[in-house]
Amino acid sequence: MVKCYHDDLPYPDTVGQEMECWRHKFRTAQMAFFPNIQCTLKIFLTLPVTTCVCERSFSAMRRLKTWLRSTMSTDRLTGLALMHVHQKVKLDRERVLKQWDASGHRRIHRRIHLQ
Image 1 (cartoon, rainbow, N blue to C red):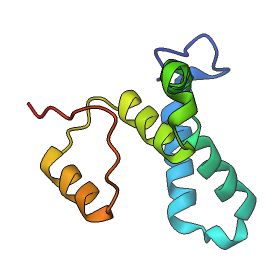
Image 2 (cartoon, rainbow, N blue to C red):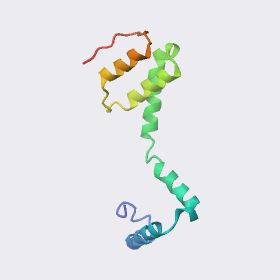
Image 3 (cartoon, rainbow, N blue to C red):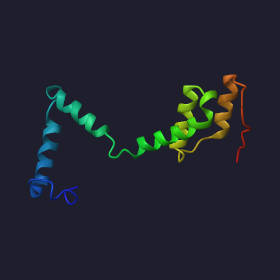
Image 4 (cartoon, rainbow, N blue to C red):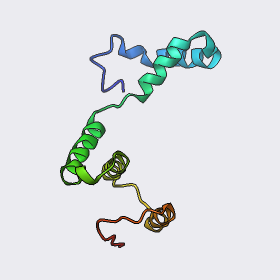
């Protein structure tokens, strides 16, 4: 990190010592005394580094809405969008079909082909 932001840091040579001081402070301090710092760190750690995941999900939603919009509920559209955005996640198709079968829904617009 220091190599990347060397020109942006006011004192890049002391980053290691500062990190050690902060580590010691967080190990010994009670977080109840620093609720704002704790909340700020949680927010900071959950911020996305880039917006590409958000942009990808909006692009997928726009593509899905084009021809299925009128026949699709919000839950189904959300599910399809998530499946499209996270294509690398492996699904157990047999388990999905069994879950669908147990739900009692019998309406299918297209044939499902299992590979």
